[in-house]
Image 1 (cartoon, helix red, strand yellow):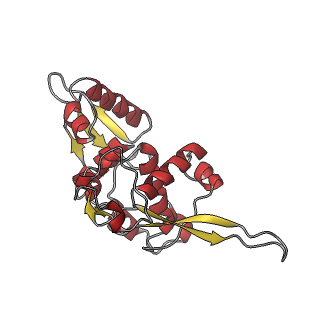
Image 2 (cartoon, helix red, strand yellow):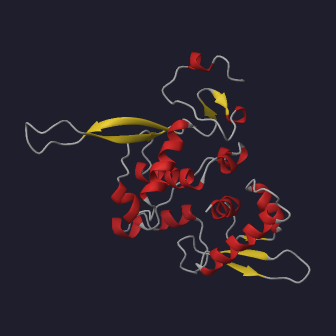
Image 3 (cartoon, helix red, strand yellow):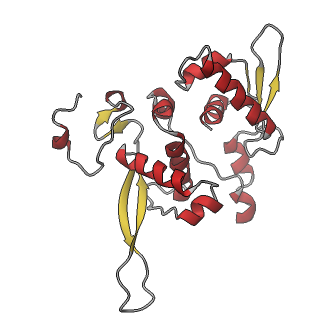
Length: 233
């Protein structure tokens, strides 16, 4: 997933994106350990999977890095089309036809500030799901139930819980509570967790640059800045 997101990022502004990056270079981009060895092998395995699922076409060249041809990002195997013009072309169509072309955007800091290497796959998945549930309304509270996680996003309950917890701990999502409608007057109060995507969350965490964080950090999103008095700035 991280590799495919990175290829989509590199494809922006290109009508027919084709890449010739060596596997070692892509492994370094994703922060994989031993990019010249095991990291490169992981990249090649991921590319084979993407090809098998219809997301890319691979062109092998003797003595040179293979070429990666981007295909339809829905995995149909068809030609790649940039999402912006595609959505604009279908803007006047019925909602059901427009929905399949709906897309979300990740800030460039996801790559430039190293979040792609810092976040787990579960966290990246749930961040994309949260952006999708926002439907373009910044600050909109979203609720991703276990059923929605499984049926709409094909994510296990474990992945959903791990990803949301990690995003809250790092300050990329804010956690809140919303009451569940009661069926009767005497029913006990119930509440569900709702989340809001933090605007510009990739640029700063609790007012500090992402550079100050390490993979082992677990920040309390409700703590005040004074709570981090001894934290390196």
